[in-house]
Amino acid sequence: MRAWPPGDDTASPDPVDEAAFRELRERGIDLDPEPPGQHRHGETVHPSDHAHPHVHSGPGEPPVVGIVGAGAVGTALGVALSRAGWPVGAIASRDPARRDRFRSLVPGSRGFGEAVALLDEVELVILAVPDDALPALAGSLRLYSGQAMIHTSGALGAEVLEPAMAAGTQVGAFHPLVAFADTELSVAALRGATVAIEGDDQLAELLAGMAEAVGAHAVRLAPGTKAAYHAAAVLAAGGFIALLDAIAQLGRVAGLDEAGSLAIYGRLSEQTLANTRALGIARSLTGPIIRGDQGTLERHLDTLRAHAPEALPLYRAAAEREIAIAEGRGALAPAAAEAMRRSLARPD
Image (cartoon, rainbow, N blue to C red; front, side):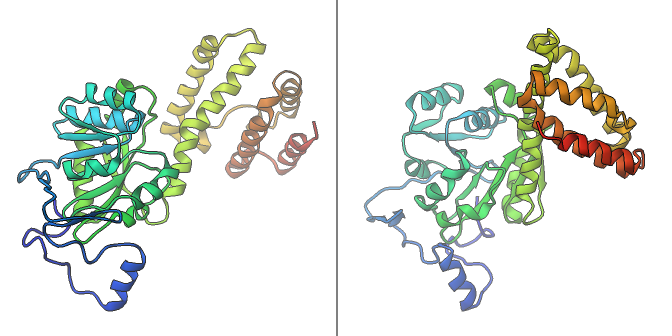
């Protein structure tokens, strides 16, 4: 895999002016990598007698992958890629138990305690670590010419990896829209999932192929939109769990255990989702809000105050949104909408 078109490894991209070079230097991108026989890891330059048999895939073959982070995301991606025929050559994790588990699930992968040691073994580096750890980790690594590094963050852009770049390297992102909880369930969920990718055209093509290999499909987001994309994903996953938790709490008041609430209200949620796919979101709104049923709203609020006060803020927020949707449809008179908002704003 190359950052620039095939040819001399020392070839550079199209000429750029000095201002562009200065901007790249200020962003921490190395434009003067170590000469052949030497290379740098962080601030350390290894001498010419330090052997580096860097791994290179053959023409038309997928790159050798290395994953930093053996948590839920890193392990599921390692398993999925390995099963799809992509060589996963190494895993780096400071947790020996996680590292060993990864290697047991991904045959042939080498294990390392530190990310820097993995660079000699792979062509494509995947950083599957928490978002807050990415800047420092990227700053501690330096890619070799021809390597690429991506992260799996849904909120951060590829630019967070730029400190690891040197001439002839690439950075990008690969964020599967999957709820990573159990390894096998996550691997199965990748099939049909959406993966948000970032990178230049060459790297994006590679990442789209990687998504396809695990059964997913890739999308390229418009610049500056990733945080909104990820916030929506959090509402769809974690936000939905929070909603289900509130539903289960109210279900307990009615004498239902968690399984009972999921069986009863889960079916209603599935039906509602099916309606939105067929009719659209606004047309699928049902319930007391769109009917202008002030009495029912008041009874709900009283019950929540008495039996499930922790769920009250979530109910209020959802009701406010429902009122806006109903008004947008023209299904709720302004006077009824205002009365409902007054009820929602009434102090506890």
